[in-house]
Length: 195
Image 1 (cartoon, rainbow, N blue to C red):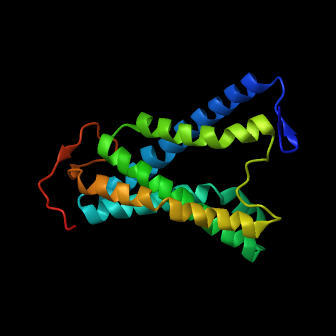
Image 2: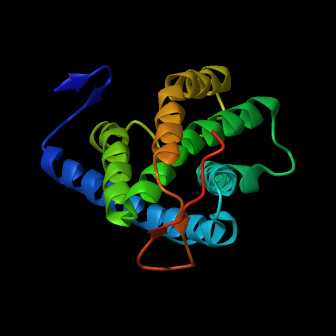
Image 3: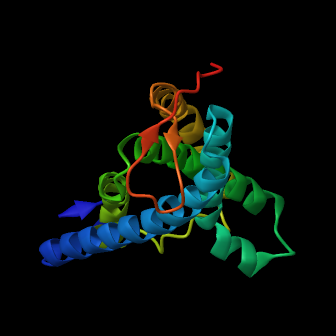
């Protein structure tokens, strides 16, 4: 079967399986690290108010977004071109918006497996073409055609605005937790929302 100048041969099932396993491992690892450790640490410090919760969500989400471009950033620093910087900023913000929604869902459900599965499914659909059609290395910053690459991220940012709106609604309707680092049970605290 031909897709443009790329073909899918007899390696369909193994490629699909590898894409699934890679996506699942990535989802579990990133969510355990970012929501399980970083977000929980920020919540233990700032989680007593809605302002603190939003601060924790924003910081952990931007960190999550930056991790997606960190290899490209550190391999080209300090000689980062304007095109590459534009792509890095776009990808950081786009991934950060997804992270914002995942953090809100985690805050609401306090279940790392839910968001790891959502993350894994998202990555799976992105990885299928990479594994099945051998379309690229998975780098987020491209050295050629950077304008179109950066433009894609900024279009994705616009399309991700509903993620932020949904996340804000989730947080506003979540009782404030009396939260400690790695605490198993969250107990709502009677503090009114400022929103």
